[in-house]
Image (cartoon, rainbow, N blue to C red; front, side):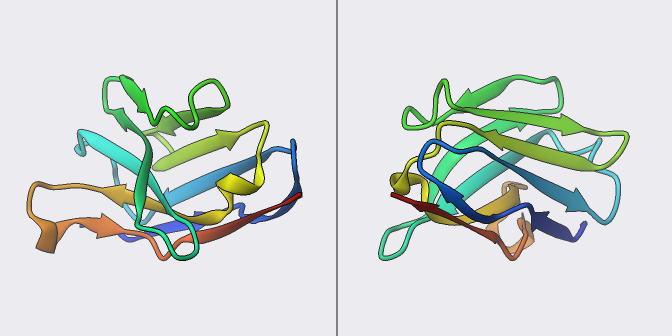
Amino acid sequence: QVQLMESGGGLVQNGGSLRLSCAASGSIASFYLMVWQRQAPGKRRELVGSITSGGDIVYAESVKGRFSISRDNAKNMMYLQMNSLTPEDTAVYYCHIPTGNANADMWGKGTTVTVSS
């Protein structure tokens, strides 16, 4: 188990960029999958994208071509580079490590991204 902490959220104008970071309190090298999720106001939490320990990446259709996920196992970090942001990207963004057991999954507290029109 590690503690996760997101950072980098804020207010940005339509078309702008932000880079989110997820810092883990310990080694992430043993975790196969790391995930970014988001929850917009009044909506259900949704997948943004995921990255495996081998570097395989999957993106939600809504962010393909605009967002980029990376991870640095040496620094125990995961990143989300977000470009061409729109107001529809406004949400709380969460870092998540799934374990196959929901009770053991690891989540950060989230960082808020607000995109103004």
